[in-house]
View 1 (tube, rainbow, N blue to C red):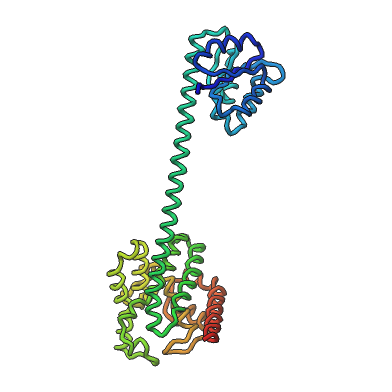
View 2 (cartoon, helix red, strand yellow; view 1 turned 45 degrees about the vertical axis):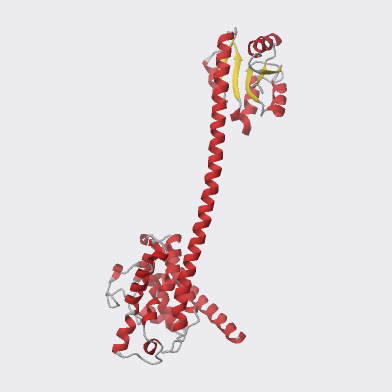
Length: 372
């Protein structure tokens, strides 16, 4: 199938001269004014490779045609050359602004007309093919990106499931239902998001918070290595027993180091930091390493507050539950160890959210007990 050219000129002789020059190589369609040209384009725009357009015509001149075509989505794919004896810079500049590729000035030179027509058509065909390839490649890359995103999401979910399972194993051994892990994750998210809003210097993002929340489930995994006689003791621990209990931080860290290939470096790092350092305190009087101030990873600082709050407002084998008011005051006053002033400021602002989560968890537990 031959390439189709639309010749638009109100002078029949001009149309015939151009058609005679080009008919051996191209299929010719002709219009005597702008309205006819637009009507033809409306029907055949996907077939027409080039429009030769006169500027000065009755009913609708060339400039009006250019204005209409330039507003159409398909206009950028149509090559346009102007037929005119007006070669002023002002006219040519306006035409170029409206998307014209080249000019054919009267009187016509057959050799020059053929060469310019061929060059313009070749250029536009190459450009359109290139754009089509780019669009196809973009669609392919978009699909591949979406697939990778889906796979990454599935991987993150699988990783989170593994972490939750490991954390829940510890809770069942500790005579917990696994709800402690869920609650700590909830408190951790609330506190971390408030810290992100108030103190951007910590560099927290939603993605980093997601990692910290998932990793918080493993904060007590080291309790697997603590003997039942100590882990489940209903009364106060002796000094020796407490020293053994404290090793759950280092033993947990060792466990995580041995299974670090289960998740990527970011999850592994956060899990290790939280497990080893969630009992450190801001004044350096925590354990196991006596870290002080911002030496303590921010992930561990956040989970530390979440863990202490949950321990206070819930029953443990060694204590009864404190009221939410009492738990709040104990943390703020430093009765449970010294926490970061910035973290405490955030804790004050999310107090109601903590209490709401505690109430919801208690209601869910009551329902479960009733059902059983």
